[in-house]
Length: 541
Image (tube, rainbow, N blue to C red):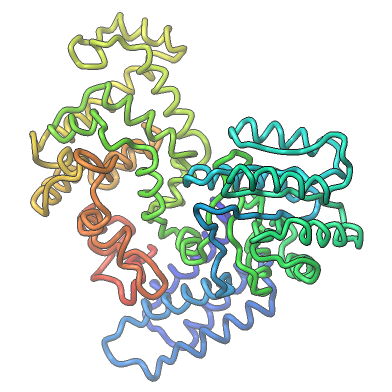
């Protein structure tokens, strides 16, 4: 996970609050000390930490709290809110306008991942329905245009550049004019970077800014610089009108917290964070969601949006599942759709209470899922539809055809039997199968939960996730497509999950996990009644 060590340390500090028998000033001081140490290790500025501790102390008045209030929950909520405040400059994000040309200019030092981020942003808006194009105005770095050409071709995005023209201002103006005439909605201009902040770089940026008149100027910075991001962001803001910031390389850097908090101190909003080298490894930055995932509370709304993007409304497999039928073909289709959601370990971050499970970390789950898909691809049509049994001899043949071990074929068939039994128990129109298609009310939910508990409750689900690659089962549990026979509406899902996704985000914008914990046999420890002020009811045991 992004900043996993910081998240673990902050979660540990909050868990220690549950273990104290008496909540007093000493308890609060110890909590603030642990939180401060965790932030300091992530290179957050000491002045920001001191200010945050001061704000927390001012908001928590134990002697003024009425008797019967849950002091631990109030303290946790205040800490959560202040962590958000630490990362949030309170400035609204720039949003492109549909139907007109929006010009975006990228600036930054060389090596920060600027050119890669250009393609990622163009691809992001392309998926949102915008027409996008890239202008390579970096005439300083050798190979810059080749990189843009390669990345843009891979993402199927229009691009412009010149191998002969050396004036970046001319290239930028020409490219923007061409795409404006074509009616392109998002035109991204990639500019030159340098190894240091020199006057030549800033002068070039000013000239290009004057020539293309960008609607938004995005500064790209490397997260590894930590709190030095403050000086760097300030220097660029003094030369051009930086409206947004992208922080890159957040997937493997322990100083990212320092970079984010330092940038927030400049009152410039962070619009995206880069979490890898793939086209899809660009995440919209929302302070509340970021802190929620950091503390292990997940981002169910984000995960469900991802699922809705890839699973078709007329999914045949989901209609069969709703009727209590789960064939190997159903499993194959579900696996293929889940692979489109992205790396499993990143999706796990969105699920409350699961981000720290070792069996769901790394790339092992994705590799396992691909292996299962290879096995399913080796089956005949009748075997996929359950019309022909798979014999021992046939298992060996399937293993040879898919390049996998026979034990993996047996393992897949056993997992299929488990879920076939789980989905088929309720019969047509009842139980888990119906819920997966967005049908049924509280009685069906109760029946589905009984089915889950009969198969080992949440621990059984964890074991299945471990064996089958993670998100495949969980996504099927939460539904899989809109419309008739598809994914439940956000409202239905909120009712089913006790306000977990798409709602119940008061105060700090956190999910209420209390009811879900009861239904699933204790997920997240000893959860009590619903959380106060929108804070999740997880005891962090």
